[in-house]
Amino acid sequence: VSRNVSQHFISPGTLVEASVTPSSYIALSKNVQYTLRFRLAAAGLPVASRLAVTFPDGINVAACTLVSSSLSGSLALSAAGSTVLLQRAGGADLPPGAEVEVVLAGVRNYYAGWSGNWTVYTEGGGLLHERVDG
Image 1 (cartoon, rainbow, N blue to C red):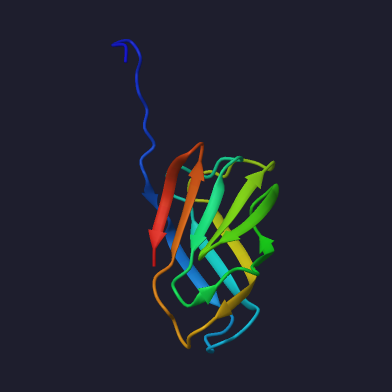
Image 2 (image 1 turned 180 degrees about the vertical axis):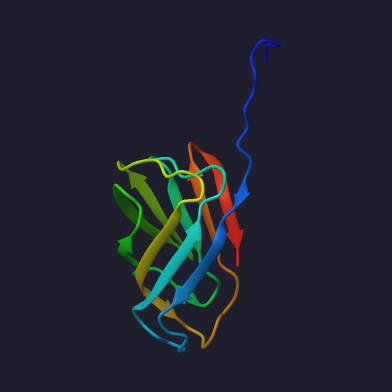
């Protein structure tokens, strides 16, 4: 690195007021909807970023679908293992402090009640911008 070139790093920030709410806590429930809500931290959310949600053991996301989202542009959903990825395309950058809501359906609960911790994080340009463990 040259002495004349400054460096800027975006360090991970914590998503604020994050919540994950299922429509059912009943064991073996099918087609459960999960509502994710959070407020972005200092990094905001660039257009070509992605949102990832890792569910705890005992929750099957293989048939997960996107019901709705407050994000502008389009979202491509993919699910692998216990993680759901939403890749953004188009729309506008979201500033720090913006509220985000995403509703997913087609999730299956194998156990009654809350079955563990979940993780929500946002990535842009290969960098981890924000993360929260619940």
